[in-house]
Length: 455
Image (cartoon, rainbow, N blue to C red; front, side, top):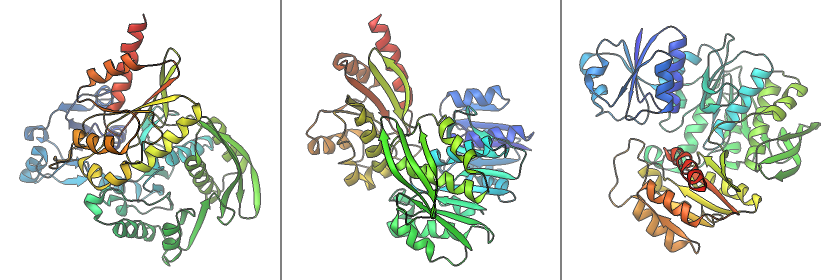
């Protein structure tokens, strides 16, 4: 079969394309720009087009599109005209995984890290899983892996409700918060979608739910279609719990318990209470699969992490440079709070992600950057959305500047950002680029530029 991916450069789409190549299918795809991801796929044998044009789907048997692709896309329109089957990324993942024993990670925050922890656990336990993750897992230096066992690990996508197509054997729900309001329209609809996701768990399956999210925990308890569920949280009232938590600079240690039994103490190279919670979710998966505690414990110590999750990517003299995928106010607050533990002046460079998110979550963004000593804002990364009148990077900056008492700047040019950093950098600084768009490229650009300046 010859499969064409519209938006193949996205982290989720590229992973699917890679799996299809490994399964022996011919693959092509298009995206708006060349990236490391598209280059990697081309090296693996995919035909990559830069730009979207109808003629590029000629001779294809199936066209797959991401949630960022609109119906007016010329390739989508041409596929419909030629009556070539069209399916979403979520539909294709469901077709691949629903016949297997799937472990699906869902939630507003923490999905990628939790999926990575579960993937590391199963790899360590020699379970040979297939993996779909929304980031580059350092252990495999990829966002996908084709395994030979029946086990498949999936980081789900709730943005368009496509996660409701999945039929998990084990489902982890990390938390539920306001996001993707352009699709769901209300917090109640978001919660209801996750409740429906709980109903999709196979009758013999297990749900693993964050006890510390009261609305989620309560709603899940009410579901009669799931035979069994476990809770995890930072309290002994949860089935899987943590105590004696010690948070360090970019690491955490804590004791783990299951029901009334203390399992042991662990240390993990992940900061913050939110990551302690993600770790407990992984323990829950291990318990359900019958993996011994000693094997679970090893995963904590040897976890290599995911790229773009509080990722230290370089150093300029004494100044460390971090990069993070955070794009929701809650995520931004969490990473800045952890970076504050390093006792440095934080220069945060944020690229807003999507016009809709910027519009709907604006009140939450106003306090998201309180821990940043210096904040630099960029234009909004559209992620394929059409502009919304009055919602843009400059307007976002003007509103935020009035709320903040600390230095806040806006630059439409990346060259000017680099010049600003070059002119204002101090020895006790820390730089972090934040956002789900292409801001990560900027961090590497100014590392090179500033190192050249230092000679």
